[in-house]
Amino acid sequence: MPIYDYHCDPCQKDFEILIRNDQDREDLHCPDCQNKHLRQLLSMPAKPVMAMASSTPCGGEGPSCGAPWCQRGRN
Image (cartoon, rainbow, N blue to C red; front, side, top):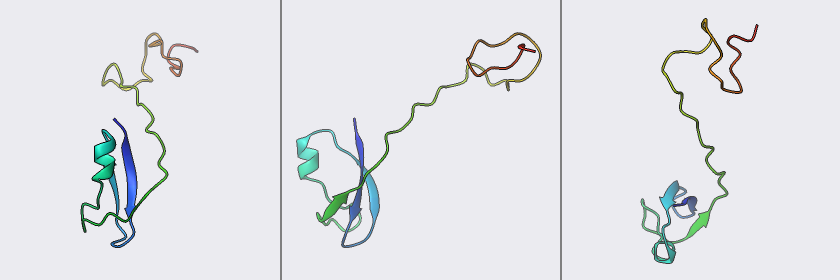
């Protein structure tokens, strides 16, 4: 579900809000001053982050872990 960034002109606050459907967009108001005079801001999509398989830091002895960026064991 998309999260959008908005700016409230009267109180000058920026905020994020989850918009699930058209009704959410119609009911949209500033969470601080309740005003409906808002501007949608240009926001960049979030980049997915790959989780590490283990908590052990890379760079030690042993074979490569197989990840494309892993330099371990290539010397």
